[in-house]
Image 1 (cartoon, one colour):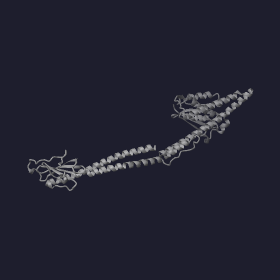
Image 2: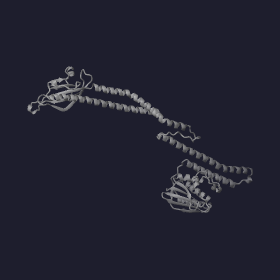
Image 3: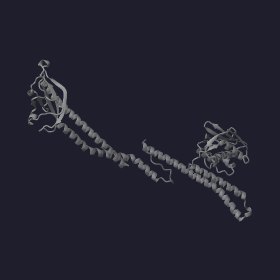
Image 4: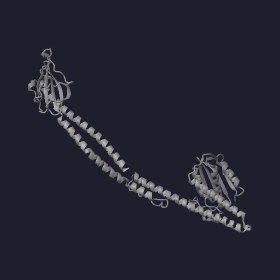
Length: 457
């Protein structure tokens, strides 16, 4: 990545410098050309002003010795600079320059005694034999009182300007490799320094294994993207460590819960094999049923942990609650006081929602002294399912942990007849998978109240 970043930065800087250098050279050339053109035009107008004031052409001159000039009339060249004389009769003329005119036929009374310098100026770059470099010429017309016209040509050398442009371009080309080298080195060093924390993060991640998720990647003090990456990585590692710890505890607790009924079954089967008359089929059946329920609970939790999606089928929750309560009436310790509203629907899996109600009723029947109540009603855009009992309730300090897996309170342990501590954990996971919430509070009956809220279907 450092090589790619350095190469990209160097190429970008090279393109920008070349474009900027070309623009600077072009701007410098244009400015110098304009300066020479202004110098030439100033000289031409200076000579033209002398002619207009009555100075004879052979007496006209410029204040700048470096400016060449030539005065052309209808009869040809009337006067010129010494340097132009040495060229052997060069007559200046170019496309946009005006032509010298003959005297007009009008009376002299119609003219002023002073000549007029025309405002228009023509320009051309020409080579002058014997001179180094081209000249930028300006042509100005002078109209005399008698109607005759002179054309004054004046030129300023472009040699100095061209040399300045050439020197500027040369120095820019010489400085370009040096600048690019500096940019490349600085980019390489800055990139290496910036990516050093990334290398440390990568090395630490490579050394972290599932057996040691407590390690964290180093977090740089800077509040930039790399620092955010390190902090996000550590947060992900923390969540992964917590998930692995929960999975390990879950496996350990599941193994513990399975060990007891399996050991009991084995003992009874060994006794039955040695003494058939002592075999108790009822006890074996109870243990098998307990194993079956535990396996079903573990399978359901595993599916929920895997993120198995909940179907969007529409479930009549009113009918589901009424039928489930009626089906349990013969086996419940206490009759259930039922209060439901008609026509309440949710989206989800009916079997899992029946499991939620069943687990809550099992918990209430196990702890109630004489009364269990079920309430189902609409609450805004949600459906509220409440299960109350008149038992001893659950202390506020213990309410947060009752939904953990394999958790059984001391009182529950003394009264529970084989529960594995997965019922309320299944309730929480199923409700969350259906987009709802579950809350444990105090019941008006004096015991515990579980409230499940599910979105309206």
